[in-house]
Length: 111
Length: 114
Image (cartoon, rainbow over all chains, first blue to last red; front, side, top):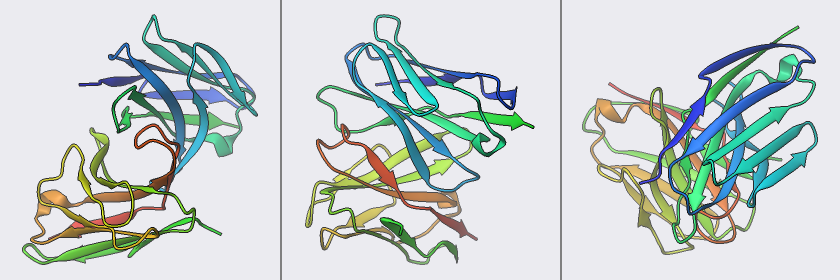
């Protein structure tokens, strides 16, 4: 069964500094990776989807995928206080029909 | 305007009572999902649907039923609510392969079972 773990559990960065979040997964056949953001127990907003090794950029958000290392990361360029939220990694595997979510990283961006 | 809406947004129920949570989507997506979110567990899939008339069990279906009467609507039913079902419930819609799709979430329903 797929296991998805995120680190760190919480992260504080200063406004304008790069924020880096990590996600590891257990199933090497995983082929579908997404990062979501959730503000204060509201609905989830998809930030970036990535399906092959390498990098995918969506505005200030960049995902890096290394399937050999079972690792996907999210980098937030020039974070703003409004980026303070919980960031969730979601992974699915070829042939499976559901996403597995990590427990999230709480990001606080201080002015 | 929001493409996935949920009602009610907040609900207080009594143990043993019946609770129905409703979800409506205007994305015209085939797939719809119900999750619950609890501290320490993250989001967990309860039921999902491939289209009108279909419902499938997710990872934690016990104590829950689902109904998909139309493309737009997907309900989650707690026939006999228990305090352990106190949680925040999220509905989502997606297109493409089930589980392979980008899922778009509603704002959530906060349920308290006393």
